[in-house]
Length: 262
Ligand code: UDP
Figure 1 (spheres, rainbow, N blue to C red):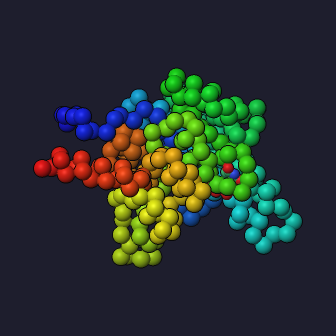
Figure 2: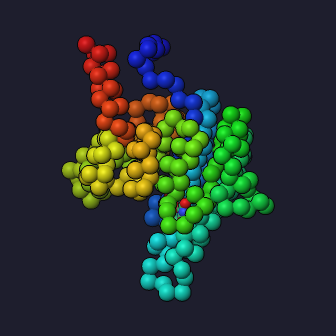
Figure 3: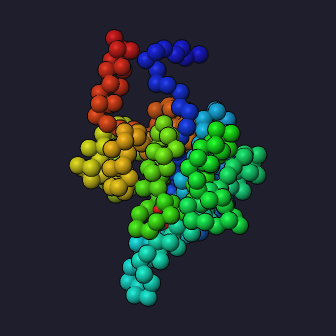
């Protein structure tokens, strides 16, 4: 059994998991594929069994993205389309909630846009209470305000719910120097600072989300949830994907690793 020392990072207590809407559909398709949702639910259940509190922000890109929906359309205002995008995340939230409850997980669906028949209103203190009681909290309708994305909602909720880390589940292994599907020489980064992401204009999360995490020192882990067990590993704090944090934290980690190996 691995021994723990004072150098080991503290055990995670609460995490914010961001799952994009695309994860709810088969690759290249739209809508909700319940086998994909079930895969996420099974992995999330295993992760929660480790005793870590889990809040999930879900996207809606599998159904509708505000910015894309208005493109070339004159009859719909952009703000309306963004609200439609937020409603899409509620549909995904309902699907994930049932998938989790069907495998005996306790959940609560909280919506930033009031929708009392299907979800509780998002109230920060209530969300925290659910988490403390061991319920998986699904956060739908993004921030409740148009013109941003669920990445920004994820950063916002991670901060206000005092999460230890923001985990961004994707279909690629982490952050690459270029699109790995188009460029075979693209390099996978193991660690990056917030500044690296901004300076190299890496497409990790939207710029507002990165800026918010940077301002408040919220670490981000970008990882491939399709690899079996990865949600569990990411929640536990094992090294998966790409870690994004401040230069000072990266420096400290490098020093710790050198101490351990010397
Ligand atoms: N959205 C919004 N405000 C928010 C969160 C989301 O207006 O706080 C809208 C926005 O139009 C976005 C859509 O909802 O495109 C769906 O969310 P997102 O694109 O982030 O989903 P994902 O890419 O994660 O599937």
